[in-house]
Image (cartoon, rainbow, N blue to C red; front, side, top):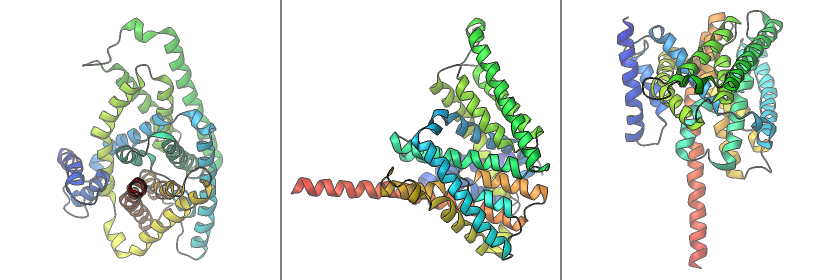
Amino acid sequence: MDPLKSLFWVVLVAALAPIAARLLPGRLPAVVFMLIGGVLIGPEVFAHATPEDMSLLSTIGLSFLFLLAGYELEPQLIREPAGKTAVRSWFVSATLAIGVTAVLYYTGVITDFIEIAIALTTTALGTLLPILRDAGLMAGRFGQYIFAAGAAGEFLPIVAMALLLTSTGPVGGLVALFGMALATLIALLIIRWVKRQEWGSKLMLPEDSTGQNTLRWTLVLLAGLVLVADDFGLDVVLGAFLAGVVLRQWAPVSAESLERKLETVGYGVFIPIFFVTSGMKLDIVSILENPGRLLLFFVLLFSVRGLPQLVMYRGQLDRTQRWQMVFLTATALPLLVALADVGTASGLMLPENAAALVGAGALSVVVFPLVATGLTRSSTGRAAETSGGAAAS
């Protein structure tokens, strides 16, 4: 198929998705319509486009998604109560995931133990951020708890993937992680040296108009660390996430200005291509033949990743906020797509499980953020009724 034709249909879906999200009832996020549109234009339905044609652009979109997530992360947050609780909560979910997956494995329901165990501990922070910002949930103290939980649910599964899913085994994965950490440290040292030398002011490199020098060097940093991750046999999402963390330390221009540019390029161009392509990759036939498998993974995402938050955040968040954390932390998609790609390419994951996992992730993006934001509105409404009743009396 002509790649230009595929590109046209993909960007058309990406452009129509936010319009559909605004016009259709239900307040569904635009990413849902991107996934649905991807299914419709993909090989399973109308066959207007193929995922292979969009492979590189989709990888760049996935990389931008995790770059922005890494850029949002403030390292000191991990040392604060929100960060410490998020890490403890992730390990609780990981323990539950191992137990649940072991039962499924020994009863013959699944054969791909490690991949599914990791999948059940993920959180789609990059996907959630624009939804939660629009809903006003990222402001204040609660936003810190959400962000910390989401960062743990993205970064720690990436580390688990690197250790357990490399072709060289856990020892090779550990060596690869060490090499990736060394590459990240070198990038940081180079950036700090450049800042001390004040090369930006010496060269008077343009930041606006046709110059956009900072944005170009950001792409160099992103491509470089993604390439290093790929050379080490790690998934590109690790390189992209670390590129965002490094970029946070660099910030050669106003952080607000740089973030605005990154969001313009990422959410305006590449990230929608990733989501539409993800929809094109969904094996709808497999899902329709065995919908119970998708529903099983959907329930497990909620139970294993979500429900522990009710206990873990007791004493730190009120009841409504804890339930919101349940639904938000159980929302997963980008890492499930990455896991499915790695697992099927290596032969470690059954295609039907990969399709069901991605389908469950897509369903979680449809349902869980909607419920979480709905809890905010219902809580606000009850508060207003209470204050109104008090004023009347």
